[in-house]
Structure formats: structure tokens, C-alpha cells
Amino acid sequence: HVQLVESGGGSVEPGGSLRLTCQVSGDTPSNHAMGWVRQVPGQAREGLAHIDKDGRASYADSVKGRFTISQDKAKNSLLLQMDSLKPEDTGMYYCVADPPAARDYMTAVQALVVALYWGQGTQVTVSS
Image: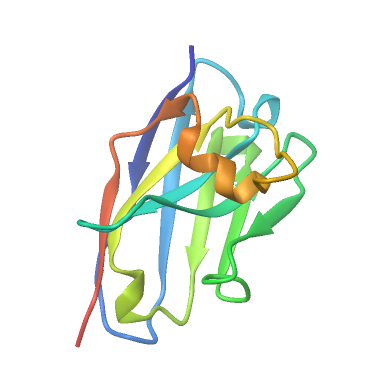
């Protein structure tokens, strides 16, 4: 049973950066497909960044080129480096593990929203 605990959220001005950390317990991140999901009140959850067991990453168009997902094997954690942040990046960010595999109608990133394991979330606010 994988347990996920996020940290690193906070408030930042537009154009700024934050790095989110997901501490993984119960197993090692490289044994699982994992990713990050964003929830904005009143909107559907959005898969942002996916990393497979081999370390290959994929991103939603909304964050491609600005966000970077990676594994820190030494610390048994998953990271999300967020640069060039925009006000529309504001939301609750969740670390997730074990999403279903991609299908013809659903990419790996989109599948993150129905992942098996979820952290408690960390709030990110981007405003001036």
C-alpha cells in the first residue's frame, strides 16, 4: 500500500517558481507510474504530469515547457518543478500513483485523475 504526502505549496507571484515534493512510503517511486493532478474549485481535476516506471515523462499542454516531473530516488520522492507560474496555475496539487494505462481515448496524463493512490494535496496560489 503506497502512501503519499505532498509538500512545497505556497503563494508566489506570476512568473515565479515552486517545487513540490511528494514523499513516498510503502514502496519506491520507480515501481509505480506516478504523477501530479490539479484541482481548481468548480472545475474538473486535471492531470498535469506523468512519469512511468522507466522514468519517461509526459505533460498536459497547459504545463508543457514550464513544469518538470522527476524522481528523487535517494529520497524516495517525486518532484514537480514549476516555473513561469501563471495565475491559472492556482489550485490544489495532488501527488498520485498507479493510474490506469493509457487507452485510445485517454492519454497517460489524462488517466492520472483516476489513479489508485492519492496524497492529501498541497495548495499553490499564484497572484500579484
